[in-house]
Image (cartoon, rainbow, N blue to C red):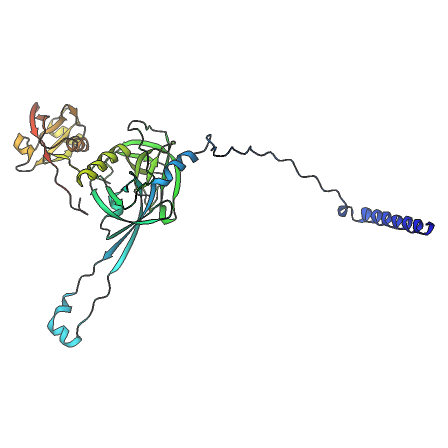
Length: 383
């Protein structure tokens, strides 16, 4: 027992000596490591609970399932060269077969508006397409057919063979204001479904030269190629616009995007679904904006109104006695500020209605009644 105790004491002495030497020569080897810093963590939300402050997750979750990706294919039809049909050419060179037609592909976005497969998108997304494929949020793909389109507002309605689809909820027509937060949802550059955030920069944008009928929402939410036809939604996930165009010199986003208001899109969509086309009023005049120089040369008191530059023979305007040189001041009691307002007011009228027009002619005010005609349809691809 004494011998074991002696061995234990010697071992402890040697160990203490080794620790002393190491502590003296290499103190960092035996330095005590600091304890883990106590970090504060946010409380875990309850099951199904979503954050509300500073987050737009609720809006995105509500709208994302109703936004689809649109893939289009267009055949490039090659024209047969006249020499191929020349007998002399064929005698020396034989029959030459043309190469196969190539195909162009395009992409865009759309919004499901009904459980039975109606989809709202931009006309320029599906223009001249030979094949249209719709990719849903769940990853499934469906072939679409065109129900109808309206090139003058750049809208089109498609349908796929499916049911019980998730649909978007339309926002209130007058519920949007400058400064409101909005989210743009689409498929930019084909990278996949993407959500961007911004505010409403302006309302009622027109005179942009994008469409014949313009009443755009302007937003700084990032809109890029591939977003066209996608949804612009409010903080509750309700549809407020259809993303349509961007102002850009490079093709990328510069913080100026334009969307067709949901109320306008809905009205046009319902007409397309019911009749396959949009019916607008028409009187057959060509109007010109009144510049200060024109107002001075015509002796006009101001630049308000639309100067009638031409009248189509046999048109409703011609039958009502409207002449070139007249200044249109009001339509059905509503003031006309410029040719764009005139176009919008007349287009909103129903064919065969008789409407009062107020004109300025030779420094006097003239009232005429015009029987509204139906605006001629524009052929696809034409302005």
